[in-house]
Amino acid sequence: MATDRQKVVIAVFLSVSFLFYSFYLYFSMPFKGYIKDQEACDGKMVWQHYNCNACHQIYGLGGYLGPDLTNEYSLKGKDVINAFLISGTSTMPVFHMSEKEMNDLVAFLKDVDRTGSADPRTFTIYPNGTIEQ
Amino acid sequence: MELLNNKQPVSSRLFILSGLLLLSAGLIFGLTGMLQYLIPGFLKTHLSFEKIRPLHVSSVVFWIIFAAIGSVTNYVQQHTGRAVYSRLLMKIQWFLFSITTILILISYCIGVFGGREYWEFPPLLALPIIIGWILFIFNFIKSVATFRNQPVYVWMWLTGVVFFLFTFLESYLWVFPYFRNNIVNDMTIQWKSYGSMVGAWNMLIYGCSIFLMEKISGDNKYGHSNIAFALYFTGLFNLMFNWGHHIYTLPSHHFIQYISYTVSMTELVILGRILWKWKSSLSEAKKHFHYIAFRFLVAADWWVFLTLLLAIMMSIPGVNVYTHGTHVTVAHTMGATIGINSFLLLAFAFDILHVNCLGAVPYTKYFSRAFWITNLSLFVFWISLILAGVEKARWLMSANRIPFSSMMLQIRPLFYILFISGFILASALLIIIYPLIKRQFECYFSMMSNTTVSSEAEI
Image (tube, rainbow over all chains, first blue to last red; front, side, top):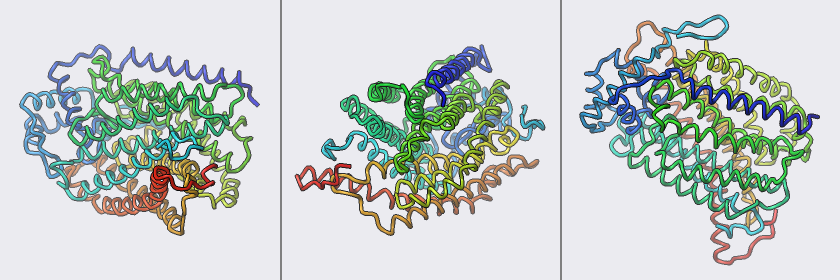
């Protein structure tokens, strides 16, 4: 049977590796040094303030009641997004956003759109099971 | 509530009782959310989906957390044979958690959100949870006293309490602009923390299940065995490094995908172990099936198998491309939170709360029926979600996509099945837990009015 000492060695090794991995990620973010404009920053907070994630997804993560909005800006454009925000839909309430909030939210979606594609049809699947965008 | 039973670790029972009430609320919010899928505009004015979803998610997550804390604290006392280090700290923790949970649920109702996917609330309300959790860690470590020659479940509890705090703190790194200034950076850290957080509470729950299994079987060899520790370290390895399978499709670092894919495949060892032990597990099940708690342990075993099978498939990036963002992911979540987490926590709840100052909770033929209905309806619910996910995946991959709303209309028949099976599942679960909750309150009121206390109160 493994001794306490052996178990502690394994646990410490795993924990140190985990911490190294965590801090490595914190200091080498995928989009390091990326600065977005203030409008898009504010738009992110509008997105969170109205809990848009409850119904919509970004990169396939979020709710399932509404569509994924990662590339909505390039697919539909600012005017269509604004129309939805103003009128709502049968399931989406009208949030009565101010003009600034709507502009910020659109700027945020434009910013998200720039980061990549969430369309799985554009992905390459390799025989070893890995994928690439 | 202190009077519930002065011979029992009361505070731990209070945590579990609070958890059961939150589970009941979570089931009702879940059904309401399902209705909003079927009846567009249902409660849209005052309780629209962006409110109902967090109400459902947070109620259920808090059920898991409350019940896990209660179970760990109770079993630590049974394991050491001593009372918890400080009952006062436990009460403070319960008070902090209860008030915060109520405030969080109220904040959703009035439209104040944290706006994160999936467990979210205003950051200020995270502070009492952090303080309460630190108290829990301190109390747990002091209660265990020594970590020499401890069985695997004590290691799992220690891992769970420490990693929950780490991942919870990590999930709030977004409050710093450095982490949130880009959506990909933000989502990478967010899913790193949430992916591992689930692993952390699983450590608490699986640790309790090993303790309970040993208690029922009367054989405590497994907890010290090499295989138990090998599986524990495999679980810990996955907790730390397999979270990347949530974000394969995010344009993040490639190494996250490779590490996560490789680490996730080590779960095949756990799957193999389940299949290897299947026959002996079945004979064990037949022997102890009369115990209510044991039935839930057996049911959870089946759900571990099904959920792990699905999880391993989804951890292959090439398969994940098809399932990501579809209801297959929801099927996995429901299998894990209901079939595994909730069933195991119900096993602990029955083990701990079944006997109180009024004696044993009377269980009738209804319980047995409700138990089987719960499992069958959950299976139908799970399969419907997978089918809905397959339909959505077909839509996502089709060359000429029809509008999103048309796709949702096409899979509506599956949503009807989901609602019906969900309704039956929720009803059966409520039938199961209602007598347990009722008896705790009856005990409390009988103690308040000084009625005779049954000698069965002392387990």
